[in-house]
Length: 505
Ligand SMILES: Cc1ncc(COP(=O)(O)O)c(C=O)c1O
Image 1 (cartoon, rainbow, N blue to C red):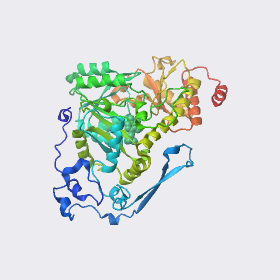
Image 2: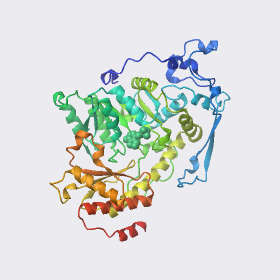
Image 3: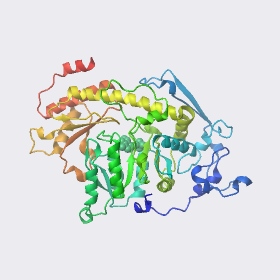
Image 4: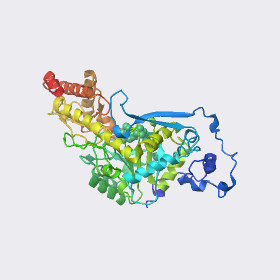
């Protein structure tokens, strides 16, 4: 087991807050005691019927919410019908005191009361069962808690695991929020090169083996942040063999891996394959077999902290996710929660609990995930078909993504007529402005580099997403982007009318 003391020096936070210390005593009638916090309840208090004058929590009598009704997708008929409500939905209801009346294990009185840093015990249990079924972590003392979304979880985790001037190893191009979170904490970034399968094990090994503290101004890194599935921005998914190689390097150099995997369940069918699986899975096991195994699932040492998010699979506004790691690491994260978000909003927790536990169950949840896979596969296909039709092949390259939300288009900037007079960054800027003038918004690749990486940028990329625009808008946006590229590179303009005709056929 990895000793977490080796990777961070968080405060020895054994002093409990009043709310935390009281939690075991606070439990509502009918509320299951928290499996994570058995020690919180002084022995004998169950027997004597404790009268609580301790914690400063309001009475649930004064919560002006008596019931909540939701209409959710039905597992037997998941449908995506634009802005309409599907013909078949399921009504779910949460009352204020459902748990004391035996209707449910979770109710509004519990959800809206002060909670624990782990999130509600009921939903933690459901998500822990889900993690067991999907990832089956190969060591005993792993734990799962709820986060207020991955953005929040990552900030708390960086505070725990990194000190100012520490380096975080990242994919060469990565999710910009990682920089925005790390920089104010004084964190520096060491970029690891990637190939078609993601992070390159040799490069990771070289960086760590040849780390020079005097040149880098800081000690050898102990933290790797990776987005292994449908990487943001490149769309790359690391195959299992790559994950295993990276894990071996992590063992060799005693790295702790932060696995940020919001696109894990957006693993798509192969591009333009007619034999896509469209039938809903009939068991969780069958569905899990279709997924690339996660780092968590190969983590024999407890050196992986996995962040999942409901944002891409349920709704970003729920501001909820779940984090899985060894119990020592999770214990520290709970301390971090206690002084920040405390736990996700009670409204979100009960809505997600009612959806997943009371309505869908584990099988329904994976059936929904399989439905999403089918939907995003169609959108992905539309975008890459449009790329084939409209982008100038002489300067553009791409590999259709097999997971996530993104297409990553490489543009050969050395074919610009002013090469030698302009830098790659200047060419990228010119293309970006031309695309905006043409009415297409795409994201320049340099935005996904740390500042120090931008000066040596030798490639030009643009990130596009098929996640939200309508299929017509996707096609039109790519057509305009192609026209903008032709203008910037002085290429012959395409007969766009005939191309539009053929794509709409
Ligand atoms: C790689 C990655 N991590 C995290 C997030 C944010 O997740 P959340 O909404 O849970 O904060 C995103 C959203 O775009 C993302 O792409």
